Length: 239
Ligand code: TYD
Image (cartoon, rainbow, N blue to C red; front, top):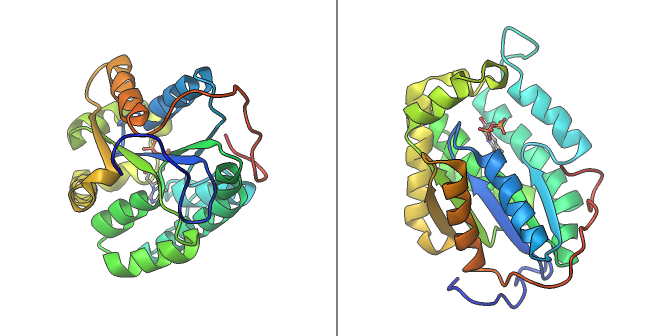
């Protein structure tokens, strides 16, 4: 969509705005999601800050299953199973949190969504993209973001950042550089296929500089202003 005022979503999910942050490991999505949520709240928007996998009780339990390191708490998961578990968490999240928030006009700021499955399970694991898209359509009922921000940085930089924080190393981080290169290439292909749906922000910079570019990308699509009011989670829980 071109810049300017949104006149409401056309897919029946209400007048809100659905912003998704995507990127490879160590891109700083979580920090940036918080920062842009704070900015939007300060500007008077209702904001629901949430993430995938997660955002609901069941989603958080699926998250634990999906991200626990094998050899520790985790068990081996086949790629097909993994894709379905992410999609299951997404189905809960969309219906219990995202759509209800959009319906009351909130801005939903979501740390990862469908494109993470296309990049990680498609690009990274090599599952068929068209099949995966069908699974996503079933999980989301066709809900798509108004804007995705790709926080872009070289794979080695992101992995180095993650490895510097050993507590945050999960099974996906441990998957190897080649896997993460495929993930990043898949993100770039997704952007190239739908350039209007994405803003690409270089993330190998100080967080404040990244945040300024994220704000600018959002402000170019979304009128920022209105009544200050935080909306409660529409489902059973959002971050
Ligand atoms: P998280 O701790 O959120 O990692 P990050 O801070 O890098 O976002 O863990 C989420 C992990 O789950 C991340 O490695 C990507 C992976 N993932 C998928 O593989 N497919 C998906 O659909 C989603 C939502 C996440």
